[in-house]
Amino acid sequence: MNERGATTLAHEHYRRLVKKDNDRTALVDHAKRFVPVLAAQHNYKRAVEVLAETLALDASFRPDVTDETFRLATRATLMGQHKIALYLLDGFHQRSPKHPDVVKNLLLAARISHDKLGNAQQALRILELIESKWPDHVLTPERLALAETVAETLRMSPSGGMDTR
Image (tube, rainbow, N blue to C red; front, side, top):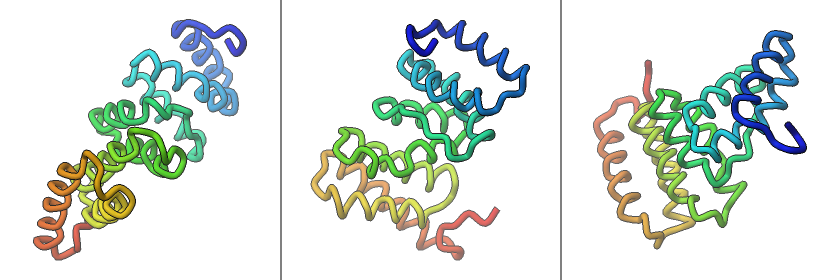
């Protein structure tokens, strides 16, 4: 699998065997290869499932899916895995500062923070970061619209936009 690659079926079979042996280290190690394969094949649902399973074993796990981060995070949030989506997006701008999806990923993180997790303060911090580093980006109208929504939430919320659930 490492040297010649493998089909998704072979990867799945390997994971079943490793789970049966309860080899957590091997599962995490395998996910480093498998999640990028799934993302490259646009099998985002399964990639998110493997990612969630792996994060439960190793909270520091970070797959190498730079070019697929936006699509993978979008799928995660559609699956209700908002914290996993934010985990994928967190620090992307530092790891890949020149990637064309940097601002798009940050806007997604701000949207998830505000709309899905009820954290307007976090969304505001992300939007301020975008404004400071990419003030004239092509997505500025989107940033401004979201900033207006977040500002309205902060004005209306006695908790300052923090979800108190």
